[in-house]
Length: 213
Image (cartoon, rainbow, N blue to C red):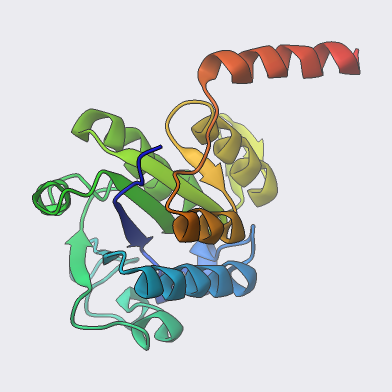
């Protein structure tokens, strides 16, 4: 088994997500932030490169205004930052879109991106899906990410449902999903996270539905 060469991607762990309409509700940010910090500490100890990503919608935008306090990383994260961290400001949902991240990872022979941060239902999802095109393996830490409640013309879903469904979806094809403790153990062992595939997920889903009938 080949030991993965990882980068830890801190996706938009910004002040914007701790209050207001975009406040993270599941897992609540007061629970996911300590898990993000644990992942940072484990990455630092293992020599895993860390990338801090911040989203900008441009000056004067109602959210993610780079001139506003909401744009800043959460202070607990900023306090851990070192000069070795790579910093990226993005304007699209995917961390790979219109940034130099893919090139930076290839230059360092990093084949796996571990995703933590916000939101599950936007930038985490988009980055995991985009990685298939740019050629990286993706790990997502389920307790170090988080979702919001959603409702629109297509339907309504609470944050727990959104997060749980998207973690299940990602683990069926686009990523290996685990909690932070499992990831830290895999890092210590020099092993990849084990994921599922679409076929086995479909078979298990069919069996679960039949059992409920």
